[in-house]
Amino acid sequence: MPKTKIALLFGGVSGEHIISVRSSSFIFATIDREKYDVCPIYIDSNGKFWIPKNEGPIYPDPTGKNETEFSQEFNTANGITSHSLPGELGKLGLSSAFLGLHGGAGEDGRIQGFLDIMGIPHTGSGVLSSALAMDKYRANLLFQTIGIPVAPFLELEKGKSDSRKTLLNLPFSYPVFIKPTLGGSSVNTGMAKTAEEAMTLVDKIFVSEDRVLVQKLVTGTEVSIGVLEKPEGKKRNPFALVPTEIRPKSEFFDFEAKYTKGASEEITPAPVGETITKTLQEYSLSCHQILGCKGYSRTDFIISDGIPYVLETNTLPGMTGTSLIPQQAKALGIEMKDVFTWLLEISLS
Image: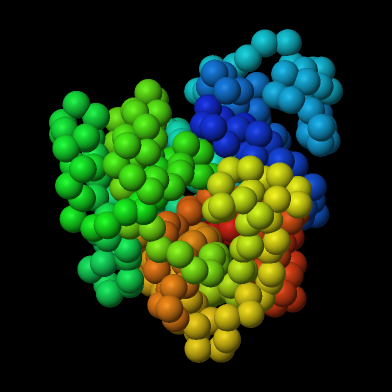
């Protein structure tokens, strides 16, 4: 039986480039090779595409390598001497593209739209749901409409509002949490206890971003829970996994706490009790569905005084061997090889 040829797109121009490289190493090693021929396609931090020329493409171990070291090894191992135009994907005879990208243009709908135009199916959510989930302000508005608790929030736009005046007169009290409206992996996020601290963070974000989300800081137990979809005929059957409790050793679950070994403790299943677990599962499914997610997602919460407050939904969550969704799947006896097959089957349907 002939195998299905798929691409694995990874790297990308976002601040989560190296996380994508790590995730995709695990994806490449785990995809069922009896069913799929996998062509890893590296998108460097400048947006250039590097497509293997050799038969039997190789994905080098990225452990301990910086971007330059990895890209050089990847290109040498795969006989690549120059980058390719993105449109060359259409000449590869691909049945689908597995998205191993994270953040920015990899997760906000842009690459999804490009693949749609190219006529190449892809794993994960579509253009609209990807864009909505990445836009934390609009996602919060949607979550509120279906009754999911959201901490008070507002948005600042560069050049459209008096940020200092707004931060001095917030409709909710300090401390607050500040992050780019469009972003992921807690890059350029932080807590502010005063208006001056808030302004410093906002100015830092405005260097590279146009929109900032300011939200009342809710403290409590940090948890995250994934949703998977299993194809059943022509239908997709979504179900929630079990939650993971995250105990960062820093003040909050920032980029370093997420991706530095030993920087946080992760407990799966989270010891939050049956009632809270069921609520988290219901809320994560509702977030997945209201955003129109496809294949999988992961939603983060803070449990404060017994109430789970939603933080955000990720449409292309981390997928290293120790990432949260693989942990949660393992707790339920689900093999990630099967999960990746489900995602590809959904994309092909």
